[in-house]
Length: 102
Image 1: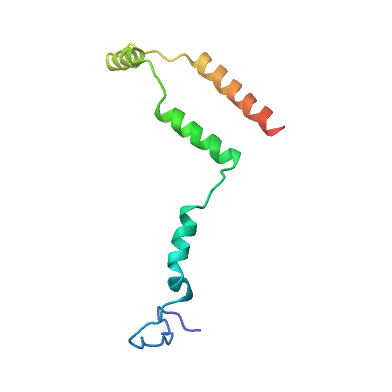
Image 2: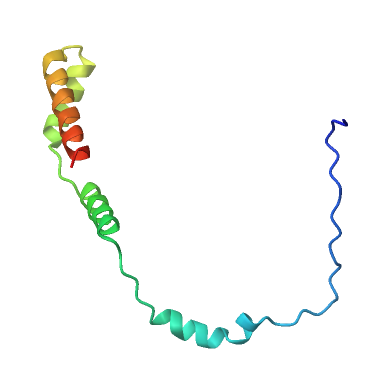
C-alpha cells in the first residue's frame, strides 16, 4: 500500500478557441422576460421568520432601564436574583416541552 499526496491528473480537453453559445444563452432574451414576471410564494414558516426579523430590527426598548442596569453593573451594585432566573428557565423549558408534545 502506497501512502502519499500524489494525485493523478485527469485529462481535460484543451479549449478549441471559439465556444459555441449554449441553448440557454441563445434564448436568454426570453428568459429575462419570464424572470421579470415570476411570482414566488413564501411558506408560512418563511413569512413568520421574516416578520420576526422585521420586528427584532424595529423592537422598542427602554433605554433608561438599560442605562440604569449598565450603571449598577459599573458601580458594582447590580445583584442577581437566582430564584427569578431559575423560575424563568423552568417556565421556558415547560413552554418548549408543551410545544413539542403538540
